[in-house]
Length: 90
Image (cartoon, rainbow, N blue to C red; front, side, top):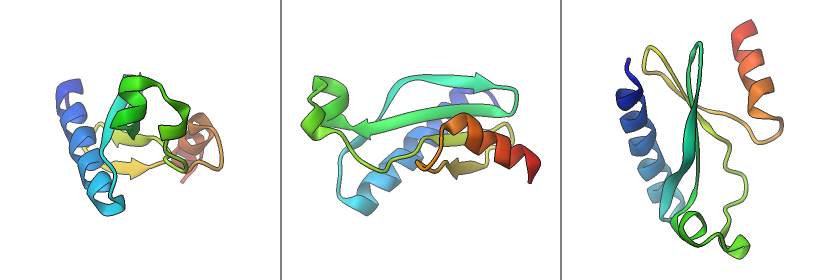
């Protein structure tokens, strides 16, 4: 899987999540590449474009796309690095 393919999967997942919660969501910032794949962050379009903290989404953990194309939503209860460490152990 290439970074471009991973990005396309993450973008599609964010659109799906946005439809499910009734929000206009988009990826925010650069993806973080790690050995196992890529970590993508997202938020509401309004927050990403304006930075207005009152438009920030709550409870949106990052999306992890592994090199095989599997998508996982990481929890918000811990830093994403810890979430990935737990995935490595499972």
